[in-house]
Length: 116
Image (tube, rainbow, N blue to C red; front, side, top):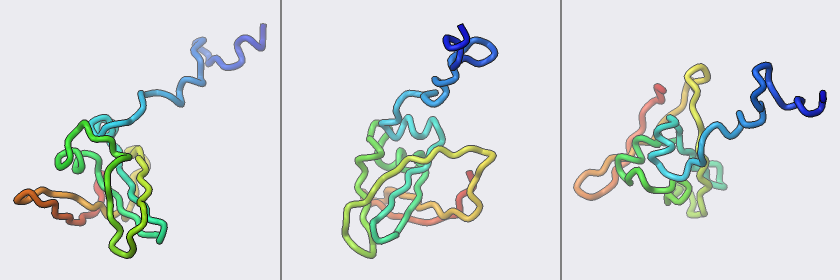
């Protein structure tokens, strides 16, 4: 009987389901609802962080963040995209965010300090 309750918490709920607390994040809209950052990382070491909400305003909420195209200004390799969940109690201190803005049908990038 002891083995049958091994994965249960004190209320009898399975503690293993905590890891999959939400559905897969496959759109910028879903990433924005979870307050996520998009990390674009090049093999040469160049890294950029963007708020999913900023990207959603430019590219739309139905776009898959893992299919976004980022260019590296140092080289021209393929860029690895990662989604990062931001927890209010673990906010990064000196993170610079790259923010896209659409002006006259062109995308312009600005940088600003991350504030959460």
